[in-house]
Every structure is written in structure tokens, then in C-alpha cells.
Image (cartoon, rainbow, N blue to C red; front, side, top):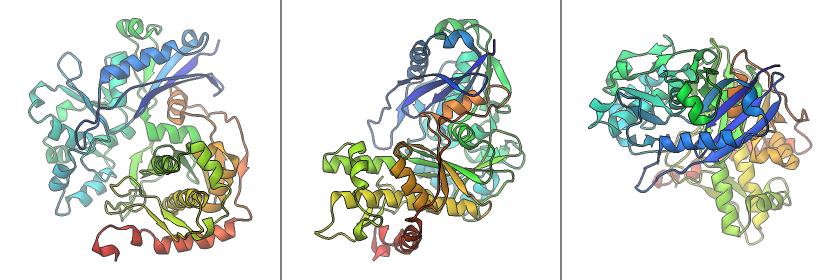
Length: 478
């Protein structure tokens, strides 16, 4: 009997499980949510015990005989999210998630006078206060003597299952002290953050066995004893592998509250303008170029609430407006804290331009979606400067409506295929639990740019000339 694989995705708001069989087909899915504490400005903390409870609940919710057939486990997870362990392997205080901004000012001060560019050149990361090393310095300065190990969220789950403190290169990038060229922890980078290298976990490849499920963990999580647990990967890398494999001409786009654009490349291409994150991918010699748009889904949900409509209803209404939304355009920078993507500008705000008394809510909805697609296209064009991106694999909200997928193909100027599953990261983790598997898609339909593509080509040029210039707050936008 072929053994099945369990993929775990420890996401920002929920843990998701996927079971794959030996042919790469999904045999079971489940999940369980947990809260984030945000009582003070910039705070975003989670309780690691809630993650473990979610894992118990999700395993119990798997269908049929899935658990008894699991022969391997791998984990993906949100990053960078910091967990500190004491001498007994217990977490000290809450986990500091990647959404927590309280260390940003301190990190910016430490990285001034050109040091930020130096760190990017060494790590491939535009390091700020959300990375593990600066998080540790800021939040555990007074408790550092109690800390015996720091781990990312995914690594904490591997530790809970196996007792091993390990990480993989794609997750190590989120620590802020991993050097791409040497593929190791860097002492000089650690010195920037007063981080003892002894606190860092052991580095292992994504597809290497980190350990086996301990008897106590097997009892706690209702798993068979001794199942091999693989090191796993960052959620973005695991999800991208599930969607596109190691294909340098294809990019994965995961559309949720935010959007993650990820393109694989067989070479270490640093961007001279630091517009993307360059991270180790799931296989040695491969890298991922990652760009994140912060408020794609959040902003559309906000617009729906303004109009008293669900997101689904607003999507349907958007499709009643013609391409170009009757002259309305939108800069979808709705977080209040600027945008990343290809722009990396904290001064950016959301803009609707071209409004008149004839504009409808359908026009605003369509303009917002077109703005999101154009910002994604801006990112794809940046990635194409070093390796051409000719097609994309789309998952998440926009992928559920064929008309919206066609809009994406027309607006991006690229062929689009739909991934078709909810948790690409969990599926990617399962596919990497052993010899890498190719994931079987439920629908092989390819959407190619159609009749509206020529119009969108002209509209995109206008979008680039207008945004982000008029979206900047302050006198520089006048």
C-alpha cells in the first residue's frame, strides 16, 4: 500500500492540513483557526499553544482513514514569526508574528547610512523590524538570558513533533541573518542585532528528514509513532512549488487578503533596486523572487462593506462594468501604511480617479480589480527583467470566477491557469515530504489574453503614468 503524505500549513490566521496520495492527488483537507492579539499599536502576537491545539483539531477532522495511511509529514508556515524557547524546549511568552510592527523604528535606525543595502546584497531580503533577528532584539532584550533557541513558526511545529530545532534555507531567509552566497548563518549579520549564533537552529535541506514523531507527540496529536517529519519550507516557497514546480517561465500568484507573487529562477538574481525578496527555493541551486502586495483582498472587502455587499456580490457587480470601468481607475494601496510589491513606498494611499456623477459602484469595483491586476503585472514585469515570465498560476479569490480569470489574463498580458485548491502551501509541504511529487490539478484550462487585451495594454500604460505618482501623501504628490 502506497503511503500518503501530510502537509501542514501554519498560516497567519489558521492551520490547514492536506493529505496527498502517492500520485499527487488530494485525499483529505481540514483546518482550524486561532486568534491574533492586537491590543496596542503595532502589536500582532499569537499563542504557540493555540497552534498546537489547532493541529490536534485539524488532525481529528481529517476524513476517513487518512491518518492511518500517513507515512510522511512536512510543514510550511507563516514567516517571519518569532518563537523563543527556554532550556526545556517550552515557548517563552507569545509568538511575535510578521504583522507586528513594533520593532520597525529600531530596525530602521540600525540599518541607516547604507547598511540596509548592504544587508540586502548579502541576504536577498529587505530586512526590517518584522524579521526574526530584530524582533528578538526588540522584544526579548530583557529576557535574552532565558532564551536558549529562537525558531520561526514552522520550525516550532517541527520541534513540537520531533524535538529537533532545525530550519530550511527558505525559512532561514526570514531570520534576517542567512547569507545567500555562503548558504549559512552569518556572524557579521548576527552582530548587527546582538544575536548569539548559538541560539539559531541547525540548517537542513527542505526535503531532508528532520526527525520522527516522538511517542509523546504521537499521543498528543493522535499520530502514529515514528513517522518521518521533513524539514519543510516557508509558506511562500512551498505554495509556489505546488503551483508551478521549478519552472522559471511561470510565476505563482496567491490572492488572499494580500497577494504573493513568486517566480522561480535557477540563478541568484539580486535586484539592483531591491524591489523583490530573493530567497532560497525548495531545491538546492534554485531561488525564489517574491513580491507582496499588501491589501488586494482587504481593500476589496472594505469596498464591499462600504456598499453593503458581500465580496462575492461585489465581484459579480464588477463584471457588469465594461473594461476600463467607464474612465474610473484605482490605486489599490488601502492598508494606510503604503505598498510593497514593486514600489516599496510607505507614503502611498488608495486613490479612485476619474469619478463623475455617472460612475456606479460597479465601476468602482471593476476599477479596483483592474488596479490590483495592473499592480500584479508591474511585479511580473520586474521579474521578467531577469527571467521572462510568460504564464501564471493563480489561486485564491480571483481564481474562483472564470470571468475574473479571463480579466486577469487580459490585464496581465499573460496566459493564466487556475490552481484550484485552497491551501497551496499545505499541498506544497505534502509534495515535499520525501521525493518531490507533482500535484495533479483538478482543471487544466488555460486562459489566454483575449479581445480585451489590446485595450488593457493601453490602459496599463496610462496606469503606470498615473500611479503611484498621484497616490503619494504629502506635498510631493501635488
